[in-house]
Amino acid sequence: MSSSKPNTDAKKIGMISLGCPKALVDSERILTQLRADGYELVGDYHGADMVVVNTCGFIDNAKRESLDAIGEALRENGKVIVTGCLGANAEEIREAHPNVLDISGPHAYEQVVGAVHQYAPNPVVHDPFVDLVPPQGIKLTPRHYAYLKISEGCNHRCSFCIIPSMRGDLVSRPIGDVMEEATRLKAAGVRELLVISQDTSAYGVDRKYQTDFWNGRPLKTKMQDLCEALGELGIWVRLHYVYPYPHVDKIIPLMAQGKILPYLDIPFQHASMRILKDMKRPAATENTLARINQWRRDCPELTIRSTFIVGFPGETDTDFDELLAFLEQAQLDRVGCFEYSPVAGADANELPGHVPDDLKHERYQRFMQTQQSISAARLAAKVGTRQTIIIDGIDEERDCLVGRSSADAPEIDGVVFVEADGDYQAGQLIETTITGADDYDLFARALDE
Ligand code: SF4
Image (cartoon, rainbow, N blue to C red):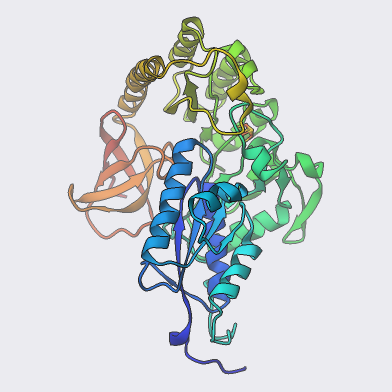
């Protein structure tokens, strides 16, 4: 084994990670590589030799937040590398912050790591036998759950979205790679995998569902095979960004059998056929409602989360009423809503009939009120039921455990406050009875096993 100098001389790198869970996975990969290369990771500007800012460029607010974060890092530290979605638009960054050292777009792990080596060369010769990276990589999420990114890019061309122009068409990871990463994460203590991509239901289309191998066993690079294989790991598996295509019906039995969590995150975005057409969304309201009803018959515990946009160009009162009627009929469990805001470069900007801001806001309020009473009623119906909860930690203020049921994805859904005696670790599953509910969260009591 070769010797190495102690790591006290190692250059120190700070990281600011903005944006969605997909960007967080990118940050984790960059940090894992830097750590593997002998760099030390620090949590403040002043202790850092350089700062990497992973940006988001999805909507104008996110852009502003990213540009502000770059400005702050320059003021506080001075040596800054920018990467991520906003990095695809280098001129905009250079115009605001000419002193940034290097700019790269999303998933440019090698370029980011190369730039760190160039601008903060590490005097320490890295010894892979001494500077061990934990087998699961450096995770920014708590240790007991992890995001599993199965593909990059998207084959759709939704008119309000510029992700395909930034990230390109769908490129799926071979299923063997994905399963290996999932197995490694489980071995490193992860108890819940959050499957993410731009379009999880399209997984493998670009590879023509090519056969790959995991543990010597053939599997197709396809959503169903992936869900079945992940379901064998014996940990929670939660699906995000699924579209209501017919083949999703085949995943529902896996949920009913308890192989993967009975949870679907489906960004419906609207319910009016006219608006969906202008949004260029591949969806039909009638079929969607029928499909939701069938899924619920096949798996009554199914939780459906979705997001919607109100005030899209051309949205009339009738379109909006259709959307509210859909909410009433679909009875979705968890819903997020955005007021439409134009994104530079998106086709929707050219559409006629932009909705005035005050009307957008009024619709947003009405939408949220409607959904709030639906969500609250669905949560109230859980009082008295038995639920398995994954423990996330302790709520000091309430002096109880805080965790989530199968219906709650971390960071975007509600939580469950659990009264329990004894010691519990984060990531542990605990059986409870639900004792109360408010608009977003549940209250429970641990069952004596
Ligand atoms: S499905 Fe539509 S909104 Fe989602 S990434 Fe693809 S183009 Fe954008």
